[in-house]
Amino acid sequence: MIEKDKVNILFRGWFEIPHSYAMVNCFQIVNLYKKYKDKINFYIEEMPYFRQEWNNSRKLVYNSESNDIIKKFKKWKGEKLDLIYSITYPYDINMFKNDGSHQEDTVIPKCVFYTSEFATLDTNYFSLKTPILSDDMIREYICKHDKLYMTSPSVWSSKGMEKYGMPSNRNRIITHGVDTDLFKYDISSRNNIRNFYGVKDDEILLINIGSMTKNKGMLFILQSLNILVNKLNRKYYKLLLKGTADLYNSKRFLEIYFEELQTGGVMTKEEMQNLLSNHIIFTDKTLSYSKINDLFNAADLYLSPYLAEGFNLTCLESLSANLPVMVPSTGSTKEYIEDIYNNGGESHIFYIKSQVIDVGNGLKQNDITMESLLNTLLQNEERIKMIRSNRLENKKMNVFIKNNYSWVKVSELLYDYFMYIIKGA
Image (tube, rainbow, N blue to C red):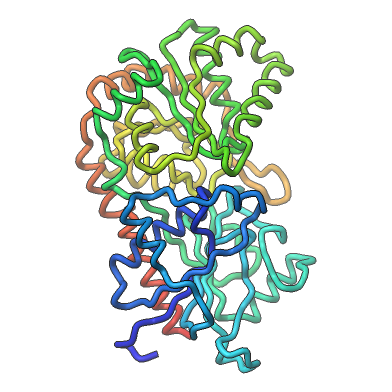
């Protein structure tokens, strides 16, 4: 490769579905294009989805500028490549050659994005042309192919590759980011959304969005709302949940959680009906990112008592919109949350006491008690109300996030890694 020439990079992954991997992929490639289009020739290849039915949910959910950029990328038609960047699941670690020969110097360097919610991985997470029968097969493949590189968004996630012997110089941590021009506070959208859902000015609106799987802490969220409203008579609490019906049956998840809480004697049928009728707002529509920002503006606290997460991007987006977050004191979010906390975000971050435990087979997760979550909510209620009534910009926090956790910053880190890989090849 001649230094002055543009490099050819193929982005293989998901683009056209509202899945977190596709969203990360799109934010990364759009910002790479804006900053490095004079240095990179961009090629894309839409890869098969994890579930066949996701093909029925193909759509772009970004602003018009980003959507137009994504639509104009060249589809790869066999052009010679300097690098393949892969964001898909399972993690495709197959190596390819530029000309179909068997010469080792024609192998295309490859960078594979991955996350590891429980700080470990197993054979089911990977994809190879031959069936993967053991961890040893993955370990041997990684050892054999020194042009295979990995990247994950957190130290927590990166631990998943440790047992496969991936050298640290081929396993770089590159954080996720946020579009700080998109995720910001707007009082008009706050008022509009609260009026639309019938949320009064003096009510506290909690919010959680995403796949609604159990590791997101959904049982804790529902149980805490039940105690606040039905046990402590704090009827001014409401909860907004946004699922992802295009990809997962979020409504069914919610039904299962309520069934579990009733069967366990944690909640009566009458209490459940009260919550559903008067205190829970549920939507599972796929929304544009500007609409999601509207939801963050309407809310008073992003509640995320997660058990296991690879990064927890929604908390970063919430803070960019000046929405306070409540998260465990341990786990993947600790890495960037603590960074923001120490650089202007102290007033907007509430920690739930937690510890990391091993639940078997190397799986690690947060251990949280219901008492700890509830106490954190009650002890900080006045602070939450104060921020709600005076939701002004936290300029120091906003500047820090923009300088350190924007997608622009991520694109710079990613470009540096790409160049490191290409030059090393």
